[in-house]
Length: 346
Image (cartoon, rainbow, N blue to C red; front, side, top):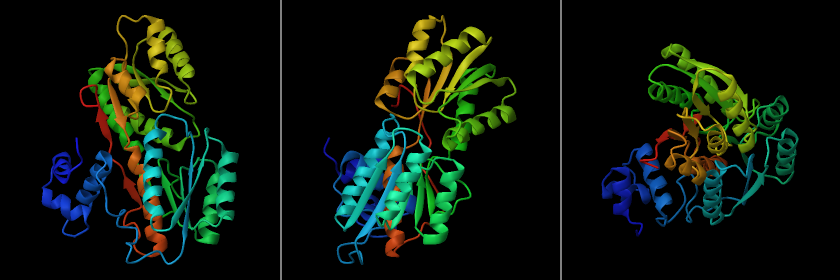
């Protein structure tokens, strides 16, 4: 289907005139509506005549060449597909205005590698840094010193380090998403159940926030539900399979599984191996092709998506706006939507 303003209007539920004003920055549009219109335009491939409004127009070019550093981890994980797409789109658009993006990716949660990336980008003279931070004392200290000693503009995305000075955080409200999952799980289990919780790594602040939100909501609102165990899979399919098999064979009454990280494909193999008469109710995260197939095949019930494209796209534009002196984020938290997917709406 050809990308048109009418198509964007239908997707966002606003008038074509509102779409036109939002796309061409003519004002009189609520910022949240404008963001929704721009997101829909990018998703269907509508040609935008210029980047987001935090970037200077051709009539007002950047006063000097800007270099933005970007650091990610778990770069091969499925959830990174959309984040990487957002980073690539922002980099392509910003290149038109003389902005160079230096991307450093790690396949693991490696503290030493992340610290080395930070040093490398600072030595390269970046004007701002967008980072998915690992929650360790050394990374916290490094980022704190950067802001204090160099006044380097900093945006955290996907994962956050509360207490560290930064322009803002872009990503899901992970604690709230955990609470959302608790409500969904209560519905699936009809108010009575034992939940096996599978996280990635206990050092991952993002995973911990999801688990904390889930546990707090279960305790506060659903007395018939309880957590049977919390296990770390290190984002491995094989480890998820092992955890599920062991739990189902050795912990009585487990009828729910909540997986907050990667490795979800291991669920399929575990269920096949166990030959259960009835599988547990399952909630997972991130809309990837593999996870969509798990939904379609009835392996999982709900998928919570964190809108990874926006997490990759927004931070670069925020940094350029701040460096140019055009805009500063009004909020310290720019939360992306918590989207609930089933096999019927994926």
